[in-house]
Image (cartoon, rainbow, N blue to C red; front, side, top):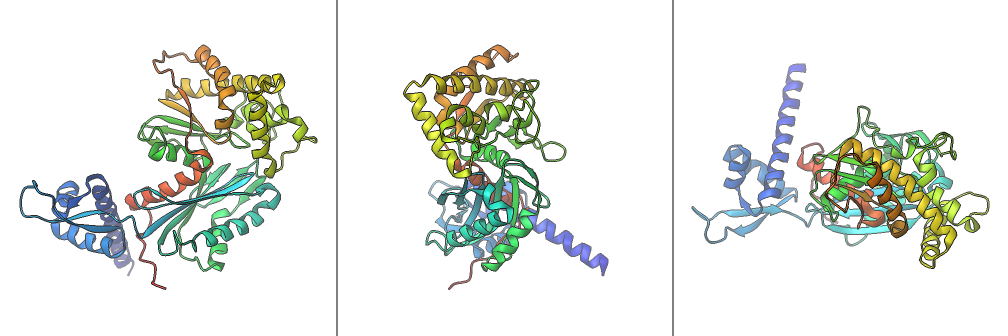
Length: 417
């Protein structure tokens, strides 16, 4: 029996690999015929025909009519990705908001919602309830209601074990060893959304995936994405592949010490980059009148960023000085990454985008003084065009990529209501 089970598992893995191989071939060459898919993948025509039939039945591929004139040989029915039946869902939970993004199989946006939410005050269990409710409501929206859910990816600012879905440590959320993946799956089941794959990953890692796949620098193989939320994290892409480190916890630039002593960080240490150039640190210094006791409740962040930008625009000397000094500290942190990794570009995301006109000049000046290798590109540091949706978008895009790689099950069609 054990041998039979191993044989079945082996066959299942081979078929899953072939499914992904065919999906990647169609994505790359569409519109294309079954014969062209066989030639591109090295699979037999009978294997391709069998798997294509399954993928068409499950709503991942569709037949797009006969071949265009000019092709050699007998006209064949062409194949392309089916963008009408599947939805990949990404959800980011951060200190002050929830963002949900749904993509179709060609990674076009179907649905996007941003909701103010004080996740720190709600606590981890309360946040799970809110996330599950938001997902359940979103999936009843007419834009998604008739689609099959490929999976749900969750982006969190902290140290994540992506295999178990456990949030090991998220200092700004004040979560530690929280079984987010497991508990969210259970909460979704209460809403009738069982058997939906759920994965959890770091927000910066998913942000750099989004920049690589659909940002203004899409396709650039060497990128660093810097989150600009209450804290600072870095997603690093090397040769098109996210760099995670040996334990999956790489990119924690916010907790890199950049000065001896210094202000205390949310991680409990002193002199971290996040304590000097993170959004929370900037706002406590730039807009103290909005934060009289120094606390930064989640619902105050967006307003304080907006006010800081307005005051900087009006020439407020105090705010301009804070932003210049913060930009200098940010430059020191980025110089370390650039010297180590030599990226094509560093992309600032989140709330950094609104403050960039006043942060960037000082940041770039420090970079020029501290980068060792000569750089020909004057646009090393750029701002994201994805706003606060980058991590959620990256989570959804990761699901589409995982499907192409055969790492998640091919879904069936949603039953007709």
